[in-house]
Length: 192
Image 1 (cartoon, helix red, strand yellow):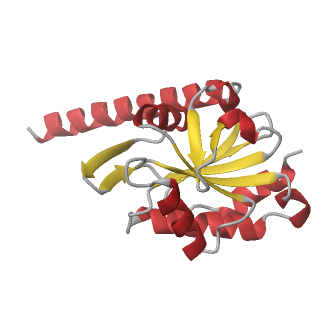
Image 2 (tube, rainbow, N blue to C red):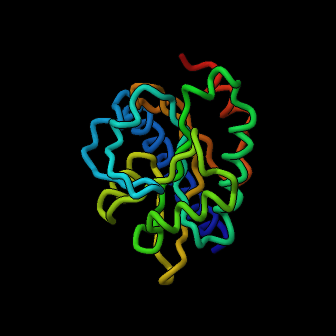
């Protein structure tokens, strides 16, 4: 019986690794595609309508959060602030740090604006975005971010910070809470 359980565990582990390898290969394939090709409509914290292509011309550091989160999101916001502090001043003017809500129902432009102001993230290069449920899900899939609503104001979600170049092409991703802000900032600092 013990050998059977060990065998099943081994098979599951191998399948899990294969799935992760396939996902990584797909992410690399998608890296040659631009997020600026998506035609979804977004609102920023000032309730201005825009499309992702309106961000073209700047390098982008992006993360998906929701403002009522009390667990992982504060860590991700802290990681974004650490990255901001480590981006060279001459690169910072060519970079936008974008926080995208996975809770567009509750994260209205007013809520996003207040959230940004409370954290001293209410001016350039910070941008907060929200869209409809479908566009949010589509963009999460592009970033390989998985999320699931577990209550009216709570989500379970991946913790991924993504870097895109000026053309909207994925350059790198860091996953986990407490990501390596030095590595992300280094990536941004090396972009043209």
